[in-house]
Image (cartoon, rainbow, N blue to C red; front, side, top):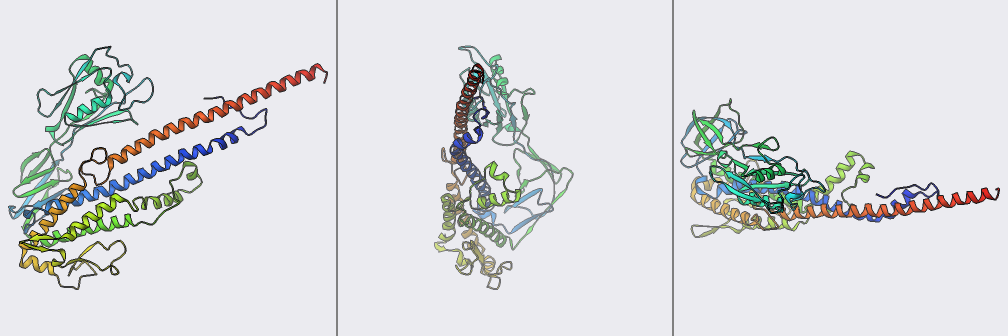
Length: 504
């Protein structure tokens, strides 16, 4: 960095002059930071919405596409926070006792922080870039990976030129999740599935392999934090059951453990339930309506033109409440007119309105007394929500004839066939919307999460480059002013010498 002399000789406010000169360039950097912040907020908004879409698909749509789900039996549990139960057609009526001893866990290995002799390591860094690592020219090492009960495992060969990315790719190809956190300079490795059967072990087959593991921070000693995978363990009516995940199919019940509490005895009661089908349909529509209303609200949010994320300097000039209010306004409108959001909404609405063929006849939701309200009757951003005629909880339709209940009572097979078909169509559409797209989207994501992550990382790189150039630009001008001050000092010194010689 250049020596930053103030205007001691010239009397100039050097600092203010230079900062004024670089302000335009600093504004460009701030613009990139603000764009990155908005992208981050957009990622957060989509993550939250994506979780709700997946929950709707898994909790309701996925189950209701099977006719066996529409059982006339129901199961109640004494603690729904600890366990959820799906009642199958073959479930036996009666009272059972359940104890949840342990939940299933994935195996995790968090590496020690890696060191380098220079810049921070990246996924493209070679092993030779890691501090104190050198196998020598032409030498190699072998790392062995064992997953589950595989006796031989898979060998991974490494050399000085092997990159961190190469190691990650081979771990992924072998069946593990693996990533490198550049911020913390650590490897993170985990099993893709929970349970003891999916435990893994990484060892060095030879000294060079062991040396590579140590450099990567993933040796089995104190350098790495390893958590073994565990099976879920429950006791039902005194009998022990173990499974690699938290779901158990026992005696016609699908029991999903949600929280472990070995000392608690949970009561599971299965009995006939004439209202079961109605409640399933009502809950499906309730969840769908909440999703539609939220997505409409997000898409139709008010414009916040002129509002941008605040810089640190701007935040300092405002109170914490003012900053919070400012940022909330932007976050609330972050998905306004989002094309991806519009596509998801319209495709889901299309499935609901398309109808289902039942016994050769095309039927629609309105055939069961289920419709949306009129445009002027519905509240803003609730015009795609469905209402059940005669629903005691719905102020709009509670006084109408309950056609759905009547049909469930008199013709349950038609009701089951329709909603099975509707759920099957919705599940297929949502699966298609959330399929894997290389470079754009991960499987199960309804938005371009991979592209957003890539764009965010590109911002980080670009901002770092711009800040480096800005610093160099400042240093250049500080150096020039420093030379000027030095020259003025010499001139003054010479002038004083001349004056002294002339007797002045």
